[in-house]
Amino acid sequence: MCGRVNFPGSAETAKRLGVNDSDTPKDGDVNGFAFKDSYVFGLADRAPDTLRHFHWPLVPAWSNTYPSFQTHNARSEDMAERSAYKHLLGKRHCIIAINGFYEWERSREKTPWYFSMADESLMLLAGLWDYNIKLDAPLLSCTVITREPNQIVGEVHNRMPVILTRADADIWLNTKLLYHERAEVLQPIENSALLRVEIGKSINKAENKSGDWFNGPDEKPLSLF
Picture 1 (cartoon, rainbow, N blue to C red):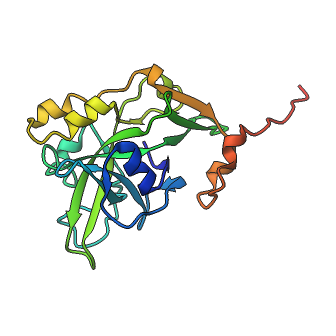
Picture 2 (tube, rainbow, N blue to C red; picture 1 turned 30 degrees about the vertical axis):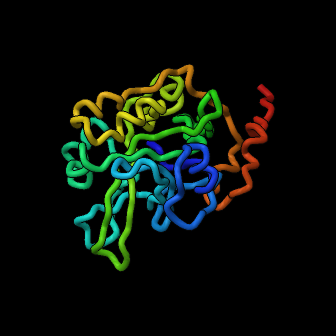
């Protein structure tokens, strides 16, 4: 699962990716999440030399209303069977560029963790995009593809986003390749490519944009026993 992310503004993202921005510059978000009117930045396969501003989560082209079901993540194992995604495979691929993502350990304490690239580069997430013209205004949107985790993420959670190297991102966005050739890159990234850091629980408040959770994990109360 991937629903809470840290991403830079569009101008910085475009510069780091070496592309042009397609729209008026927008700010990033240190505590962004998939919700109505939320957005992220990335590249679409039809014009990968231009940064796109994607609404997140995805709103299918065929939908007359904002989806009442979850579309911020597409499970790689069954997305070919899902009405929201199957028509996009091999036709509308994208990558979403972020600094990193947050995940909560599946334990009683629900300890929050932050995952980023060990080399401090942008994290490139494999995704799918769609374009809806049936709502009040045209909407370009995306979903993040997830899969079973590698070891470093799996010790915290049972799902992870598909993270691509720059070379694999080029393959995922290559419209000259057949879908099965492009889909070969939807593999778990090497453990050594990721950095995992325990953070403070102030990240739990979606409205908190201070980034104070990066100061370190909360102090655990002393036990008398």
